Length: 112
Image (tube, rainbow, N blue to C red; front, side, top):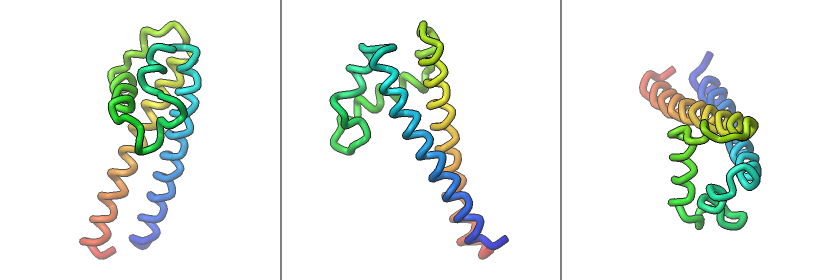
């Protein structure tokens, strides 16, 4: 298998998982309106969570909420499951992006 095919394969798998992650994050924000309205007010202002002009502190608040697994003490099992899914998809997407970057360097310097 050539290096280009390997990079393209990893790129498409990474792209699909990033799309899955962002879709799950949108669903989590919708669920958060009902399950945890205080946190929803803290992290979402209007409909612009995903745009660059959004206050980065709001996005960091949600990131720390999910990273530290504060949702585990919540009463809604569906909300906990969705938070777990978002957390796992974020970890998977991060690892895939790192593997894509590593494979780019490996193919470029090894000359596969």
